[in-house]
Amino acid sequence: MPELSTSHLVLIPSYNPGPKVFETVTQALLYWGPVWVVIDGSEDGTDVGLSAMALEHPQLSIIQLDCNHGKGAAVLIGLARAREAGYSYVLCMDSDGQHPAHLIPRFMRASQDHPGAMILGIPVFDSHAPRARVYGRRLSNLFVNIETLGRCINDSLFGFRIYPIEALYRIMRKHRSMRGFDFDPEAAVRLCWEGVPAVNIEAPVRYFKTGEGGVSHFHYGRDNLLLTRMHLRLVFGLLLRLPRLLRRRRMTEKTRP
Image 1 (cartoon, helix red, strand yellow):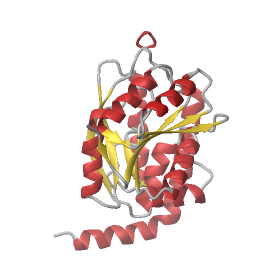
Image 2 (tube, rainbow, N blue to C red):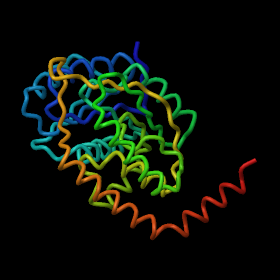
Image 3 (cartoon, rainbow, N blue to C red):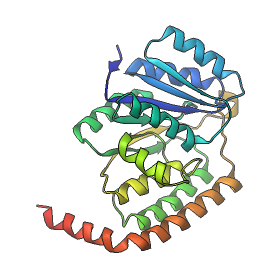
Image 4 (cartoon, rainbow, N blue to C red):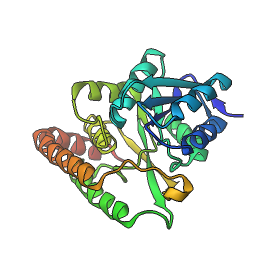
């Protein structure tokens, strides 16, 4: 039986994910409730199937968007609805089957043990992981270590995470960025700047080939340019916040046993 919660929910943004989304949602429902799916303007017919699933599963809710807004924008809409419904935390996971649904309870327990923290997955890649993606995230992680003064974000891009709703909602409402592929790294950095602690947990990730039902919306040129602009923006933001962040770091070091 899945664990049911009134404080933590699973949030799955979904855009043209292909049939893997049904397996993803089914697996999530085996381990947790509630599960919310934000259908971000999908045109591949999965919206119909997901709506049918929701009629059979009381712990599954569907948020249907008329057009594609981007991953971060879909998450923000889910955050707003979850906030209104009284939830405190969301576990975000991708809809394409890459993320380990069986680890949902472990991540949720970590969140309960560390209230106010963000719980960040550290990807453990299998042999199918594209080398360009693996090496590219190493560069992104290097920038994030600089932007946070090395404050415990072990992976900047892995989307299997738990966020405190109120803190993330406030940050996203304040900034116009974080609406697309730049959501995951920028959200973690800005939460870190606000003093939200991070707990990092290893989690396997699998990249499916096209023949296995894998669907990717990552565009190397467009999305790498988006990430480059994001890191430049965050480095500039670090410089503006550097005195405050250094003071906080010194205070933290003084309180350590």
